[in-house]
Length: 229
Ligand code: ADP
Ligand code: MG
Image (cartoon, rainbow, N blue to C red; front, side):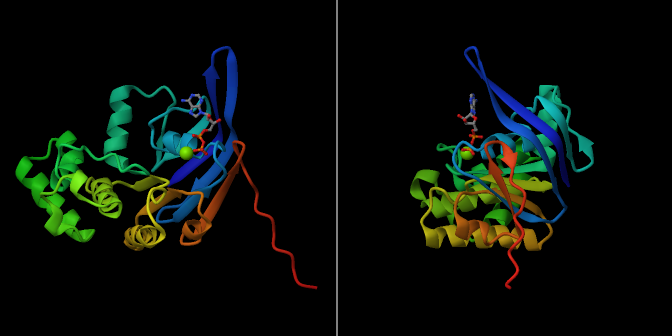
């Protein structure tokens, strides 16, 4: 589903150039539930933003669902890929505060020019899936953090993407709510979706199938477990 080959990313700060991703090679198969861990500043968000075509790499090759994602992609093409292939979930939910839950979930379909009637019908189905059918008319300000994240997950799914990218989706939630959100991701994964979750919490990473560790812009190679003597 995802192949990164020797991906490099730099940020310029004044006259300095910060090498943030240093030759990342990574492969994630279709239907995998993967976590990306690493300390603050290790490059997790930068990597997820490149995977999500919110940012572009400076060197290397990125392949997503059979498409080579050129680093000089036009804005229009990048938006098309984002709308059709990728669902995003963020730590801070990123819901529109003046739109109710139903409208927030329906929003990706608006950009795909789906009729209002069809948008709302589907949005209600997806709200139902995350257990929030009765909250359709509520504004984000009337909902708890866990409920807002469920709305965001419904929104990420409604366009039937190939992959869900979540950047610290439980970072703003207590542990009970975090586990409920992770159960949702696990359910989505069981239905065949590829899900990639950035986290710095061990218990969250332990709920995924595989953990990729980033350290200073490099993927740590797994240390084989010592065999008992
Ligand atoms: P993480 O998500 O693992 O905490 P980030 O990917 O956000 O790490 O950041 C990696 C490094 O890149 C950090 O040193 C950060 O300060 C720097 N960085 C991130 N975004 C930018 C940017 N837009 N401009 C300059 N430096 C940035
Ligand atoms: Mg980050």
